[in-house]
Image 1 (cartoon, rainbow, N blue to C red):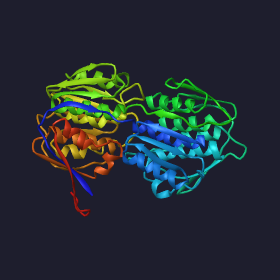
Image 2 (image 1 turned 30 degrees about the horizontal axis):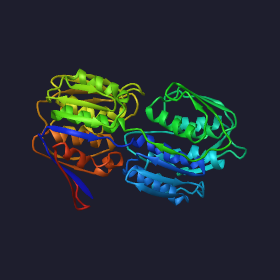
Image 3 (image 1 turned 180 degrees about the vertical axis):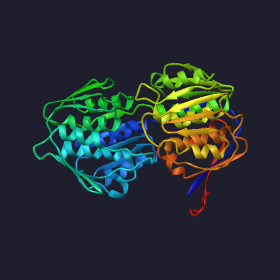
Image 4 (image 1 turned 60 degrees about the vertical axis):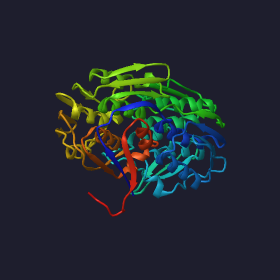
Length: 425
């Protein structure tokens, strides 16, 4: 086991380079199944969720090799469906995408229920509704989801009652090789949905409307391999923006698409932080003195739920009262207890949390309860007085490439050390 040790109170200065987006890479990696061919994927972040997805595909017969630190060749020619390893599938949410990919290519699928961050119930009801609309038969038991479409999938219109990134991805994968036109209404509009559509179209698919509420997919007979570059990670970029806002300093956030960060930038400006956008980087400048604000999470282009915990750290030290209204996931405030150990004054009444900003946080031993909560705790440690020790950091490493090294380059006093596996708070 490992832990992160942070001695707080240091401003951040310099440049930080943002990696490829994990949430874009995962669906694209599983989408390579549809090609039965070789694909070269560039700007792939080497985080644990990505390496686990490669392990899943390898166990199914794919050939995968790194061409350099961020470029991967994936050959799914000999991949076999329905044999994904339960122990890996159950550890990551993105493995859900095996359902759509296997159904499209093999006309059947068997996948264990997925895992991932444990911050509430995350059902796949809408995925199943969509598959059934395309003609698949779905059954479930306590361990697996089984899907069958012996005559292939047929295009249809699907309306999602709630905007769902995962269901939108799965129906895009299934619809790409379906017979006829598939229309997804109330589709997710996130940048990684657009990235998936661009990848599939580069492989020969016919997808229009990605990035809007209506996506139209004209099924094609087959796809082929391609070379494709993953977009930068807007959530990683937003996390470093929040870190600079908290500690003070000036940092250039490089290799980003500023448009993807507009709502994050807007909220930081409301809080008194200076944000300047350029072609492919953003400069964030802060004196560490933050104004309160109110946040409501919404599907893109609204404020992202995956930035809510990091901003909660900012609200905990802002000069005044703030609120967060979480509309996407239930039970996402589990990290609040960890911030309270550091002196934060927060009252949770799901789906709301009220923040009364304190002058200072203090170091403590705290736990990373999920990926984005872990990032929030790291930011709290950067600004806190004294030493903060963060355990269960494997959750952070699911989605952040070398967060310790990148923060250290910016001037943080932060390190990662090994601990006895029996250590506990």
